[in-house]
Length: 432
Figure (cartoon, rainbow, N blue to C red):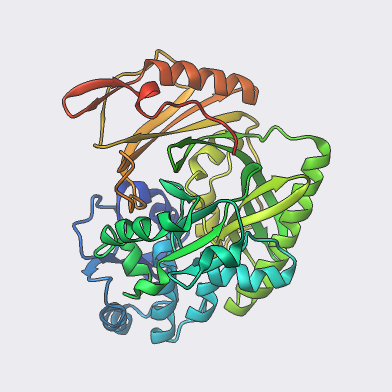
């Protein structure tokens, strides 16, 4: 039954409206939201049926964004402001304050966006983080101690080309090189133009790496999905290459991870959800397990980029869950599938045209697509685009073997040449 316009929830969506974002926006509309989209000042790639109005504005000036949102609010009387990407969480918080709408405020948004601030606040709640300092600063490596460190973005996901530093003499040239590539980028936008908020230097921690998708409803953890992450190191750069679910861990390690996830939920409820007036939320922590100790890398307060893999394996549509939470219509979360999934991340210098795909059945290979990677901030690695390929199986091992077959048969067109994807970045995945 279609809702009347008066009964629909006026919702301001902040962020780009692209094909990759269309599922979440459609779910919002299905849940009874009247969506008005406030987009970055670029041409949107998708026209989504049901979006009431689409307005483009320069996201680099938050005052301009708030002023435009205020004008739209006078007409549509928004009840809620939503985002899909972490890049815009702080912008959305500033808009909520300007419009006097309930929800996350800027001081709370910093906890889930700023890795340095996050580690300071959540470590007091019993969650361990790698030793971290803001960069640039005086004698950073002396503060962290030997032997190896990571230079990574303070406000953005760090899954592409994270640089390892072994000597302090390597730090300044790497920083200058990275700084050149962000002056007009999304990273500077997220920092509100403040170059001092762009980078952190952290201790390089080794161990088994994981990420978990969590759904909390009425204060209770009702769904979790843990994925194991693999990466490869090319020179001084680390690239995420593969994720597999379910994670292959022992019963003892599973208990250690479960205890950690409950602490994450408690910390996020106390420091983020409750101050924002929310008792239901979706989040995903990324963490490393080493000698039965869990070290948190970051916690994102949104659906993760691997939500497609979660849906393939469990049948749980996290974008639908997030939309239902915003519309206050979430009742239950049910798994309808129990399959293993392998997700391979492909890198290229161009969008890449697939010249040959393996002859796998549709049930084994879900989809494959390229996107401009938002984290291509360091120019040294030969990679600015990222693609995703999914395979499924009855076990994690079977899904991974099918992925090996798939990767070995893919040819990517780069610079007029056909290059086997398996050789492009030497995809010998290993656990860090």
